[in-house]
Image 1 (cartoon, rainbow, N blue to C red):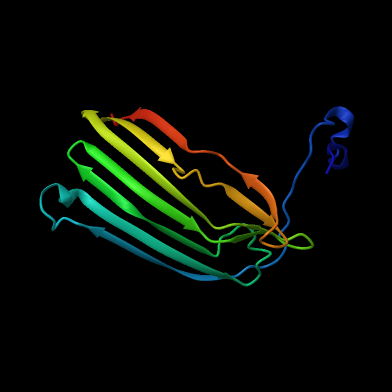
Image 2: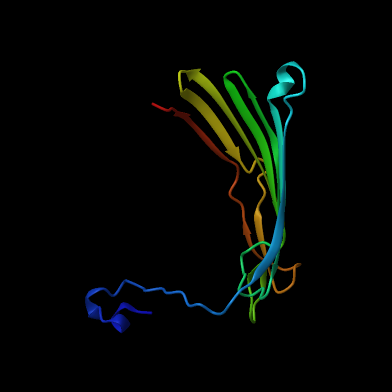
Length: 168
């Protein structure tokens, strides 16, 4: 809505006021299953290994109101800790997701991300770290009306973060 419509007059012509409206009630039924296993019973260096996984399934009373909320997600990976080193390799899968509904229906295609991290304690509580997000460089693909007609293709690349952290 233009700024003039809410009493700002011509003094702020570049502002656009955006509001959200509750379009109805949404009920989400679902479940989540999670598993975490520390391998402390293994010998030597293997004791620091941890496996993690989870699966979430949602069912919506109204898919249009749940737009952009995935009906299913899965995560899994390995973490490792030994002396000064902490490392992880984690994967996240998101199912096909309704993005918009109405006359134009858009779906975001299922996507799998793979993330990795490595942290090394330098001294005391000071650590150097590197994180990598989206290692396979998976794009976000959005389809319109039918899942075979692409509407938007977003490619962000792999993101890296380097730095130092500490507790004092």
